[in-house]
Image 1 (cartoon, rainbow, N blue to C red):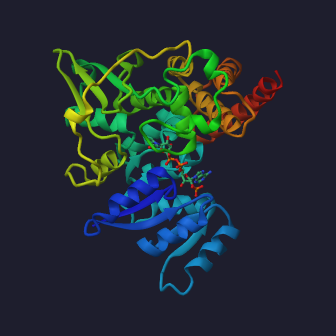
Image 2: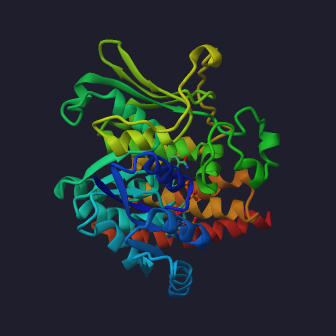
Length: 393
Ligand code: NDP
C-alpha cells in the first residue's frame, strides 16, 4: 500500500490523480490533500478519500473545512499555511508526494518533500525551473526519487534507458519535446494582438489549469519544459529541441547517436503519465482511452515560430545565462500571466514583460532557497512596474 500526499488536490492534476487512485484502492491510500481556494471541493474529496490531513491557506478556511467534515466520522486533521503544506509533504507516514500546486507557491513544500527523501511525482515544473541546482542537489543528497508527470518529460523518461543517469550525453543526440502549439497556433500577429483570456484557456487537446493553459498558448510552457528537461535529464540545452505536433499523440522523443528514435505515444490524457509514475516501475490501468492510430490518421510536425511566439527563445536565453536567470524568467512570467488573466495586460505583451525583467535583474548565483525567494520577489516587483507601463500604452 502506498501513502500519498497530493499538493494541489483541487486542481486539474490533483483531480486526475484522485481519479487514478480511486481505480486502485487496494494499492493507494490518500494521506493528505491540500487546496487553496476551493473549500467545497476539498470537503467533498475528504469525505470520499478520508485523508489523515487536509491543508488550506488560512485559519478561516481551516474552520470552514473542519465544520464541513464534522459529524462525518472522519479523523481528518485540518492544518493551514506553509507549515501545513510542509507537514503534508514530509510526514513519516507518507511515501509519495504528488507536487501539483501551480507556480512558485509549490517550491517550499516540494523541496521539503525532496529533503524528506520522498518519491516525488513532479507536475509543478515552476519549482524546478526557479531553483534547478538547489532542488536537484536536495534530490540527490536525500535520495529522493523524482518522477516526471509533465507528459513530455514522462515520455522522455519512458524513452530513456533504465540507467539513464550514467553517460546519457554519450548516447543521446537530441531530446525532442513536442508542443501542441496551443489554441493560437495558426493566428497571425494581428489576431494575436486581440486574443482574450477566455480564448487562451481553451486548449484544443488538454483540459488544464488557467496558468498552464496561457503558458501553452504563449509557448512559455514549452520554454519552462526545456529548462525542466535540462535539470531532470542532465543534457545540455543545445541537445533539447522543440517540435510542434498539434495532435499531441507523440508526447516526446529521444534520438540516440546510432539514429534510433524512441518515443512514447498515447491519448492526450494526464491520467497516463500519472498512472505511470504512481505505479513505476510496474504498470497499471489509468482509465484513459487507448490510442487508435487508424482513427488518428496523420501526425504532423513543424518548427516553432519564434516571431509570433517569442517566449520559447526567452527561456533558452535564460537557460544559457544560467544562475538566477530562470528564476527571473519564471517570476516575470507568473506576474505577466496573472495580469493577462486579470485583463491588465495584452497577450502579446507577456513576452515584453519577461524580456524586460531578464534585462533588468542582474544574474546572480543563489546560495540557498532564501536567495531564490528574494530574487523571485524582487522580479515580481519589477515585472509589475513593466506591466503598468505596458497597460498605459
Ligand atoms: P490548477 O490551477 O488546476 O491547480 C492548481 C492547484 O494548486 C489547485 O489545487 C490550487 O488550489 C492550488 N494552489 C493554487 N495556488 C496555490 C497557492 N498559492 N498555495 C497553495 N496551493 C495553491 O493547475 P494544474 O493542475 O493545471 O497545474 C498544476 C501544476 O502542474 C502546474 O505547475 C502545471 O504547470 C503542472 N502541469 C499541469 C498539467 C495539466 O494537464 N494540468 C500538465 C503538466 C504539468 P485551489 O484550486 O483550491 O485554489
